[in-house]
Image (cartoon, rainbow, N blue to C red; front, side):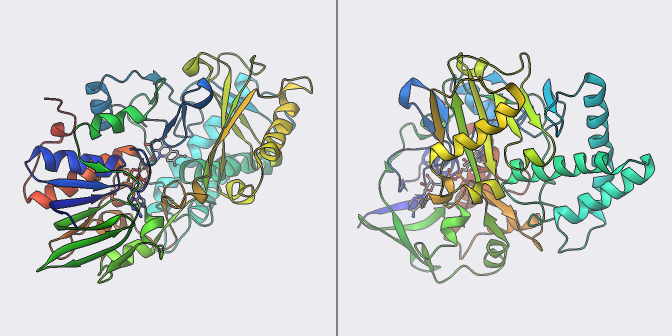
Length: 447
Ligand SMILES: Cc1cc2nc3c(=O)[nH]c(=O)nc-3n(C[C@H](O)[C@H](O)[C@H](O)COP(=O)(O)OP(=O)(O)OC[C@H]3O[C@@H](n4cnc5c(N)ncnc54)[C@H](O)[C@@H]3O)c2cc1C
């Protein structure tokens, strides 16, 4: 039994942000974390002499970004890599036709112009959509508008349709029919995107500096009452406090392994029921030489051959050694979940051989994530199922009984599914606990 003012559950970016601000404000805080490390879904693997961000990699736009302000304050080096928003043309990209030929500059320009034409028609299509419409419904409406206006032939329509399917998979780890029409509303990038040559996890260590974090404490229950505060049960004892900030992922909140008693009331419960965890895995392939196109940020495959493996990101400049990153996203992640690494690599290499020939080298090292099987995540991040509204994110953070607060990426409407959302939601939770505003700059203040 231990008594503090506030218990924070989860030492990811949301939980660490909350704990840091509350501690800064003079409250006694303990953070309970199931894993043996800080960071949660920000996780840098340094095995094999490589720096591999197995969770988040990007800041999706550094303009006015509080995460960028924090990583700058913590002295973290960054590398520009503005291709993390599934943009068709932010930086040089090698586009390959269904037959495996690289598009000429003119062909690529026309393809990209078609995508922009459909995106222009997409905004009104989303605005006009029914409450339970899917991202498929609205993209098909936009495709119909743009292709009719331009009198596109079938193949031209299909290439853009595939792009939209892949954008849904790569941005949300969800098949396009299962993502709500508004599911990508937040998906804009302001300014350059950056990644971290020395690892994203230094953000977590910076935020966690000086906090009382109890690692390897698996929380199984949270009992709360307006009058008596909270009791949190872990596999290493029971903790009590006046209030609790719960930052575990949606997948944990929805599981039987994490029981909140009394159950969450409306509007929190309804919002939670309309979100679900995705299927999104990373596969890093390290080579002893490059064999792919020079001077491009990414390689993309059009057509049926690209149904699963359609995008490769060149991390060579980031790591100073030849490396490609690809994603098993949506259906590919679900289908390959039980595969061995060797089976996945063989499947990816088969696709790369179509583009670059039979004599390309095998990878010398492979790292593959398994977020779907992670009991403390159940997926990579949450997405909006059909019938969900963007407000569901913020609704999740509605304070409960004056003593229970939810925070985390899924609770932030403006930019959910990101580190930014986690940090901003942690800031909001701290303000709600304290009952007054706190300048966000306190998050990265080092004095
Ligand atoms: C593969 C992948 C790629 C991504 N790419 C990007 C990207 O490029 N850019 C970006 O901005 N975002 C990206 N994200 C999303 C980003 O990582 C998350 O939105 C963010 O890190 C979530 O932070 P959080 O604090 O809300 O949750 P988490 O980091 O999940 O923190 C919650 C913590 O709660 C702990 N916990 C869970 N259950 C229990 C329990 N029972 N008891 C105690 N503790 C528990 C967890 O271990 C975890 O540490 C990616 C995520 C993944 C997985």
